[in-house]
Image (cartoon, rainbow, N blue to C red):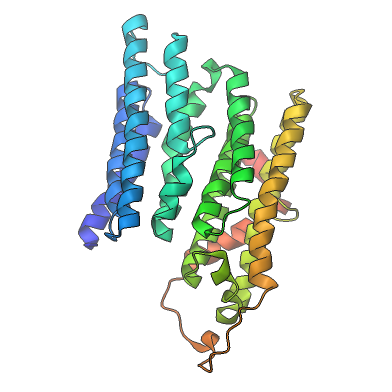
Length: 348
């Protein structure tokens, strides 16, 4: 892709998200979401592969549907209340439509079916943008809407997403689909605690972005898209294989890794809010997700590919990929748990 075109598209992605962040008017927020969708569509279709074009079409249709619902609901609310302000949502039908549309935009269950299919058709870097940056604007709108929503709605969305993300990833062999279900499960964790402690949602989002970035960048550096391909990564880069296994366990939420911190704090908050059943279901759903992360770890570190080629040892070959983003995201994914008190001081 032409670097000038790429710069314009990435700038538009940043502009759309910033516009939605900064707006308290529904039309401006809708405009930001539309700029976001239109900017990422060419990035998704840049390889001209049938799967990429199919994924782009599916993504565009779901996002356009969600945007149309947001516009219709905000217009209905403005018609009834006379105000376009986000903080003044008085019409229950409009609120229901908007939370449904925003859940569709970020892939919360039961509106999550497009996410694995779309991510499967993309290259890993565009998939990384879709899994992280594209979640920010709709999530910011959900955080602003949270005080007007029924707690039962957010709790149901959170539990369903955590369960759908766990169950859906169990029988997958494609790594991008596994990461898509991982994303759905993590969104569930963020949504369930939103009304009780929004700062924990922000903390969970930050850790999720770093852990997912580390996972996607690792897969890109090893060019792996299926579980079978992971068995050959140990010979390319033994150290990277070891850190990737730890990053995957961090995504699963095992102590003493960073991924344990948001899950621990969210379960603690749910227990404080007298929701022991919700906390138990979320903990069990985390075990489902942990199973497929362990499958990936097993394939990477405990299996050897039946490869008898008499060629140059792969680890002697030089890589041309930049390793700084991978290094930073991996370090953050593995080592932040001891800093939990300091991080809590910053976010509260």
